[in-house]
Image 1 (tube, chains in turn yellow, cyan):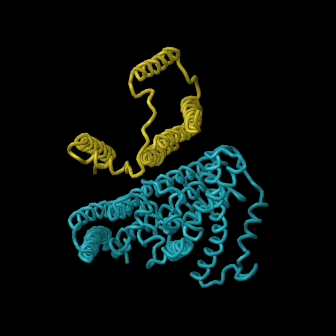
Image 2: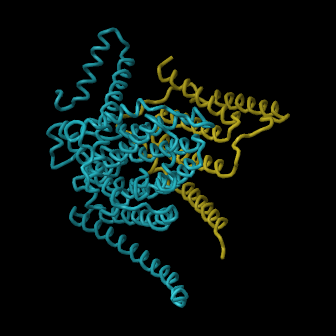
Image 3: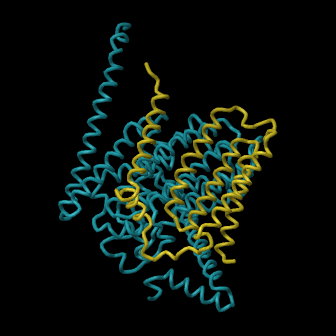
Length: 169
Length: 397
């Protein structure tokens, strides 16, 4: 086992543990902070995959914007931030079965894929991932249409949010 | 390649050689040397931080026509050490009902969010922690961790003033992140790269001469991000006592305070890197890496001095003024400037350098002038609305 594999397993375990704490912790702010830890773990996994740009974007968007807004909303809406009552209902076993079945199905599907057992190709030293990504997102032969459609969708969501919050006089 | 041309590599090779001669695994020795390098950088930064306290106090004293610390040691230079001893022996309090774990992690995260920034700061052409290809975005990512530390400190203290302070600070940081991100794109457009070293290398003409408006907006956003006056409403001594760090005592408070000073110094450094050529100064950086370090430290100190100058001459503004200033003025101007700069860059890409510079400066002046005219006409309307009430007031006389 190489050092990288040990590191990946450690990060994976921490990320999964933090994700478990998100759903089990009673205190909503604690749950949000555990969510930050989970998202950070995902960012570290992106770094291990040599996707530094995606890792930085993960931290900027998910921790810097989304998690902070979660914490903001939780702190503003509730007086007591503690959740009482049972944390699972009587269907918990069905949920567990679906989760395990999904995991097993995905593992089965991936095992039949030829790339599953391959080791990653070594990235050449002059390779600029950001330029490649930028070209792919803006060239007509690449993904310019999905990119623009997603932009329009986000813009529509933004305008809709402003319209809903706007105080008509 | 000798020690004076690439001191870091030579020292690292020497250390790795020693470790492997002891029978250590080569990979492990490499990791250990990298770890030692990080440790040395952080130690140097913390020592600089100690003297930043002294510099800050001396400079504010000059602005306020005082002498500043002048009793302990020559020019009061030993004063910060006395302060540190005082902070260390103070009682370490935790308020009742505080969330102990979160409360204790927050100052560490605050300091960490500043120190982590130095991973991408190029001190010399050959001295950079990692020349990350998303270097400028890294500044924003580290800022996100700083925001998180403040919200954790404010919430876990179990104090309403600290929560209000944290809300204000986070509102400032989340909103000023946007013009800052837009302004980070301008050096990226000019240099065609997001890496710090590439941005410095392409500054044959300092970017401040190409886009002075961008340098100004970046400075404003940086001051807001730092939570310094005129954007220090999170501290707001007259309303909130001390804001998010109100309940912290001893060295935990010291972490927030030292973190703020080092953060200001670091942003001075980023201002220098992005707009004032970083370690470059008329080819002096090619003479020796040590000279390059001296140049970037001096430039960072100049940036830090400008930030202090603004802090000690401006008054605090209200939260609604601050948010309106950001969302209704700074953010639109920043976005327009990015679009204009990208367009001009595409139009002038093949042109002579003097035409390029003139075109860029002219477009900057036009953007600044038009936005100021719009603001003037809007504020004139607002003023007329308020002045329309005047006769009623005068009728009482």
